[in-house]
Length: 340
Image 1: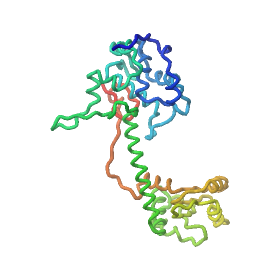
Image 2 (image 1 turned 45 degrees about the vertical axis):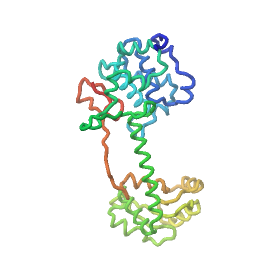
Image 3 (image 1 turned 90 degrees about the vertical axis):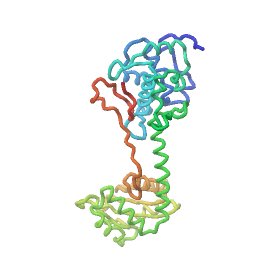
Image 4 (image 1 turned 60 degrees about the vertical axis):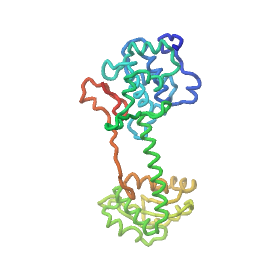
């Protein structure tokens, strides 16, 4: 049953108060209808103008406009607009006259006259072109197929789904890493600190750093290593392999006191536990530079620099090379989502 007719004027389709109140950054399905309405006058629209106008319409502030995907490459809102535009294009509701622009089609105008309250994946599935785009061949042998998007009511773009899965797996590995480190003997933890710091580019060679760590003999100082391969500056290190005991300000004070007279400028305090608020405030107020690394950050650094972990599989996420196709439209996301 067709919906009541709508007038093609974006200013006359304000978002509901519920949407504005509960969805600071709208999902890609929510922006599909406003994006299509923006092109309702039949004129060629610029995608960058559409992003800016929709950001105002949804009431996004500057921080929300700049919020990035976990990849750190694309802005979340821009990326979702990009996917909304792609889905509308694949369903034949808009076309790309030229790079960076879009224009409503006759089919798109027809959809607007039906007055849908929202355009979703379920709505777009009435068009064979979109079904074909949304379905990937699973097996050449049995001819079966699988949908790329999963549930129709999913509000995540493919990139967001991929990023969420990656972050969940990463957090699980980091948690296991920290548990393994806490279960190891103290001397292993010292070697781990050396390996991590040298992998990050500190300490010169691993052998030099290994001789330095744990050899100072000064109370409260576990060792020192070179900041760079030339030894232009030194890093003083304290390493505490504690389980659940919080490191308080007295431990930081003891570490700093042990360095009195050495004119130390840079210190690192690493623990498998956590730091108290007082310890963090004390370290922040010091004239010298002291870096506090707790268990969670230690696990993150180990993961980032490949210490204690190995790569099992690697998935390359690619985008269309717009310069290769002179007439191709430029995609906004990371995946290959725009093609003519």
